[in-house]
Amino acid sequence: MQTLLIVLLIIVCISLIAVVLLQSGKSAGLSGAISGGAEQLFGKQKARGMDLVLHRATVILSLLFFMIMLLLTYLG
Image (tube, rainbow, N blue to C red; front, side, top):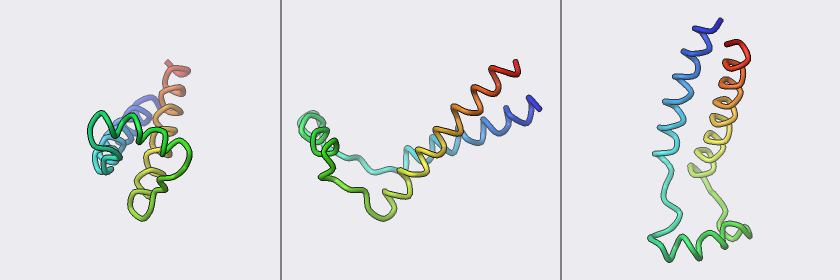
């Protein structure tokens, strides 16, 4: 059981890294980080198309990562 969870964790980790690297950058430089954060916080920038799919995949994979890690910690 523990070996299966470890293999699943490795697959989720590699997938999470790939999905994060495929996402496009939201701002350009330090000035975009300051003003772009406020825009994203208040919902002016909506994810569309592939960005939306990648965002949802990131959320799902990160939740899977934490659940598997908690399960491995509990079993170990």
